[in-house]
Amino acid sequence: MRKQDVEAWDLWGAARSGRKERNAAGAETWFNWTQWPDHGPTEKDVFGDAAGVRVLDLGCGSGGNLAHLTAWGAHAVGVDISPVQLAKAHDRWPHLDVREETAERFLAATPHRFDVVYSVFGAAWFTDPADLLPLVHAGLEPGGVYAFSHNPPALTGCYGPQASQMHPPAKGDEPLYVRRWDYEPRTWAEIVERAGFTEVTAEVIPPPAGRRTGTLLVRGVRAP
Image 1 (cartoon, rainbow, N blue to C red):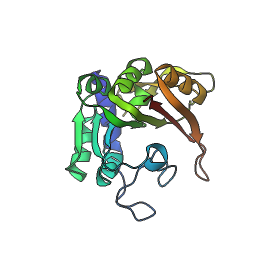
Image 2: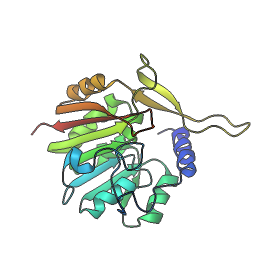
Image 3: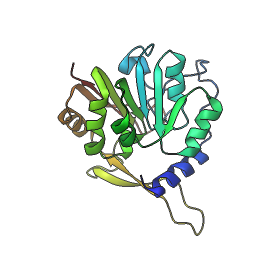
Image 4: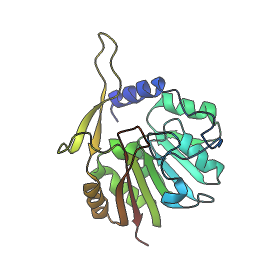
């Protein structure tokens, strides 16, 4: 884990206002796969009922999705490298089980297997899939679901590891960058299938009216 990555995510987290108290439907907790509020599929649409399910959130941030799954009875754990983000999670939802760790290190060390592993604009986008996917596969129960979402590639023909600037630097400061991995949906599906997953889907969720950027959602199942 690079110190620069932690600094970048802390900066990004400090600049965000956090999840609102209620969504458009009046719910206090909800799951959001996309970058747009009150938009896109629910957790049930992607991996089913969360009650009693052992779940791992890779890059849980300030904990909004994790809090929703916990409220619905999941045994949920979240990992993130940003102390700023994790402090926000603890402040709003003190009961959440969140750990300051990289996805790779946590998966390599945990003795547990999970029914669901997911990442929403999190570690799945910002970790080399060659490193992460074997660990996710090994960490899932047979029949378990891996799902992740993030922006589609920003530039046509520009795929693989990219440099992502996290926040405009203040005057005189050096910009902070992290690496992300961009692929078209079909390529992501092939990568996930090669890692041993079945029933793989990769699609772009259309954006809400008035917005231009959709959300890439990838899902696969560890074979029983």
